[in-house]
Each structure stands twice: as structure tokens, then as C-alpha cells.
Image (cartoon, rainbow, N blue to C red; front, side):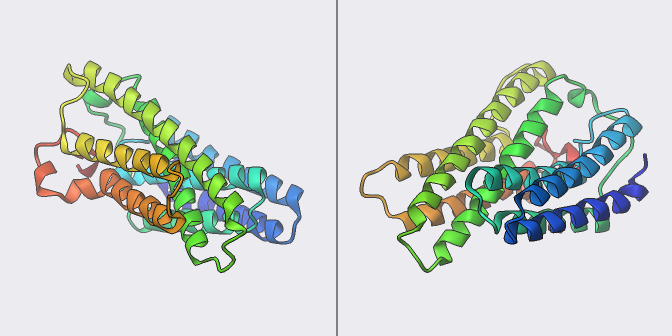
Length: 262
């Protein structure tokens, strides 16, 4: 499998996700499940085929992690849809996945089979995959927060806010596991669990931001709109942790996490 074939898998997957999103709006639940699942299967087939072709996990570069993010967004969307039946969630998760797919088509950043020694660890793949799923869940939760901020009927938002909290709990749980896997990987690769590398520092900042949101939401006199803005701000911090760190002067030449820019 070569990268040149990605466009065909991407088109097939996106078309299936679009059909699923339209089916959700028309209350055709079974069709929404089936087509979304087929789209996920098509997209995952390419990821697995690329994995076999590269002879390594496709997780090294930003382009390769965007593949996983594009896959996990509709997956998180269908999970939310199956649990709370929000008709709009599949549309938004599909559109966001399409954005990352288009970025990959114009700037794939898929490199050779070579994998630097630090990445040849059994903890590398679970660390990145778990993190990407957490990022996708947080992406969906951010879409929900934006939706709630601009929804006119406030009284009916209580159940949606509870659903949003559940998403954040799931996302933070996976992020925590990702950090633990990353610490084990760092110990094996560099001899220490944590070194306050710029990426690690921003990961800690992001983790605490979502933890603050959870604790703030449990305050009896919290303001729902402020909580939504806090969640959006946390997602901005997450973007900084994911890819923004690569452009900071403090990370250039000193961070062990800038290998994906090479």
C-alpha cells in the first residue's frame, strides 16, 4: 500500500460518513450506524495497510497522526450518537475529519520506513494511539460546547451538559493513560519518566486545564457558559500541545518530541 492510494480510501470513507450523517438527520438510525461503521472500516483498512507497507506504526509524523485523528473523530461521533442521539454530531465530526484529511492530501508528511531508535519501543504505539483517541473525544466535546454556547433554549441544555461532562471524563481518562504510557516509553528510551521537556510541559498544562473544567463543573454555583468557554480554551491548549509546540523556539533542537518535524 502506498500513500498515493490514500485519496481513494479517503473519498470512499468520507462519502459513507456523509451518508451516515444524513441518515442521522432523517432518523434512519440503522443506516447511520451501518454507513458510518463501513466508512471507519475503509479508513482503518488503509491505516493497517500503510502500517504493513511501512513496516512500522504510521505514528511518527504529524501527517501520520492526522490519519488516526481523522479516523477517531467519526468513531467518537458515532459513540456519542449511539448514546445520546444528537443528530448533528455525525455531521460535525465528519466535517472536522474531512478538514484533517484535506490537510493530509496537500501536506501528507508521510516518510520512509526508517524509525529512529527512540521510537522502537512497545510503548510508542499505545501512547500515540490512546492520545489520538483522547484528542478526538476532546474535539467532539469542543464541538458540543460551541453548540451549547449558541443554542437559544437554555433550559433543555442540562442533559446535554451532563453528556458533555461524560465526554470530558472519557477524554481525560484516555489522556491520563496516554501520559502513563508516554512515561514508560520515556523511561525505556531516555532513562527517565519525566524531564519537563517543552512537549511534556504543555501536556501537563493541558491535562490540568481539563481537570480544572471537571472540578469547576462540580461546584454548586458554577456558571455553565463559563464552563463551556473553559472547555474551548482547554482545547486550544491541546492544539498547542499537539502541534503548536513544534514551532516554539524553546523546542527547536532541544525537544526530544520534535522528531516528527524531521
